[in-house]
Length: 182
Image (cartoon, rainbow, N blue to C red; front, top):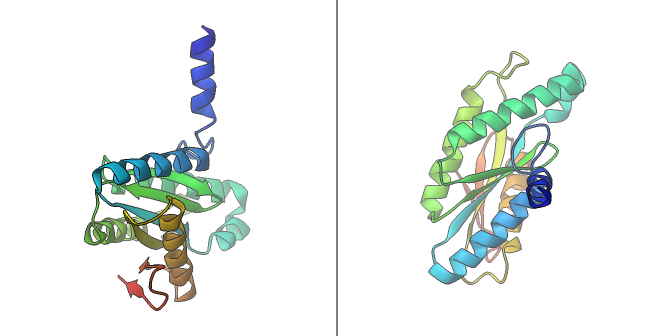
């Protein structure tokens, strides 16, 4: 009984109470596991960092209950838009992380664009359409740790926000001038 209770606590500690998605702790664990798998198999994986556009305005206009409903809605949309083998977590606030195992850069771009379009076409519980900005990176065998791909994806996300939102941008830290718009 104690072992079962400890297992339940372990699962609760890795779940976002609002959205039901895995949380940042679970996301970091999955990134580590995927990185170790990539080092063993040499199969890259994609990382998507996603952020709901203009979320502060949503909270201001519809209150925190409206914002919470939007977060729950986005969680469902992301789960439905991603492939069964993919992993999605609420990484914090209105930011989400997806890990795309055994994925090429082209495949990650296709999945990211599908996610972006699916969010854009959905109607949120507040009665309006939403958009999402996405940064994409591909973890490489040469990376020293899983944080490199996350930083690259975060850089792409920042660029997507800076350049107008509702877009997917791939980033590559090894070439500071490289930013691919999708």
